[in-house]
Length: 273
Image (cartoon, rainbow, N blue to C red; front, side, top):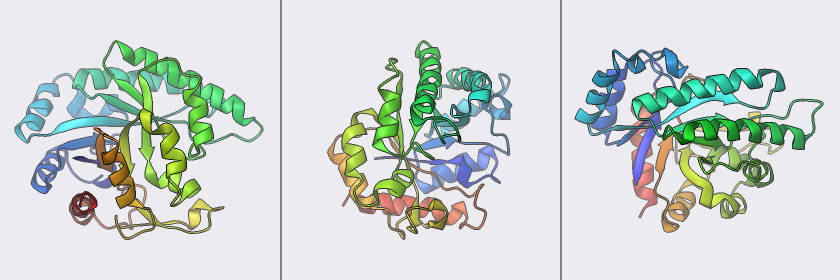
C-alpha cells in the first residue's frame, strides 16, 4: 500500500518540513497542492529551474516521490475555457520538468442555463485536449470526482467522449459518498478500470440534498466506509496511491496535520487487516 498526503493539509509548512515530516511519519509520496502559499505550478519556488535539482535531491534523500499535482483547472465555465486550458498546459510542463506523473483537473459544476450534456461535452473537450498535450510529456491528466461530477452517469459521460488513453480518474471517495453513501459499488464497479489515484477524507453525513450539512471529521471517525473501499481496491489489484486530502487550508478549524497525517497511516494500515 502506497500512502501520500496532499500539501493542502499543511499550508503553513515549508517544503523542507513537508519532506521531513513525511519521512518521519512513514509516507512514501507527496501530492502537491500548493507550497508556501503558491498554488500555481509555475509559481512554486522549488519548481524554478535553478531550484529543481535541489528539490529532487531532497526528495531522493528521504525516499520520497511527488505523486501528483493538484491544479485548479476546471472546464465547466465556458468563458474561462481557454484560460483554463492554458493553465493546465503550464501545469503539465512543470510536472514534466519535475518528474511529477499526474495532474488533477475538475469538471466541477453545471452553470445555470446550460444543459448537462453541453457542460459534459465541454469538460470532455478540455480534458481531451489537455490529456493529448501531456501524452508525449509523460504526464497523465486525471478528472477528480468533485462537485456535480460525482455520479457515474456524469463521470462516464466525460470518459465516453475522451479518446486519449492519457486520461484517467482520481476517485475522491468523499464526493461520491454524497451520492452513493454505503452503495459505493454502484460507482466503483463502472469506473474501477480508470481509477489510478485516490483521495481519502471522512465526514459525518448530513442531508443528502445539501452537502453543506455534511461535516468533515478525523479520518475513520465519520460515515464513509473507508475500510470497505480500501479492501475492495486492494482486492482488485489497485496499484496507485492512497492519498489523504486533509483540507486544512480551506477549513482551518480542522485538527492540524501533526494529528491528521499519522492517524491516516494508522487507519490505512488497519484497513488492510
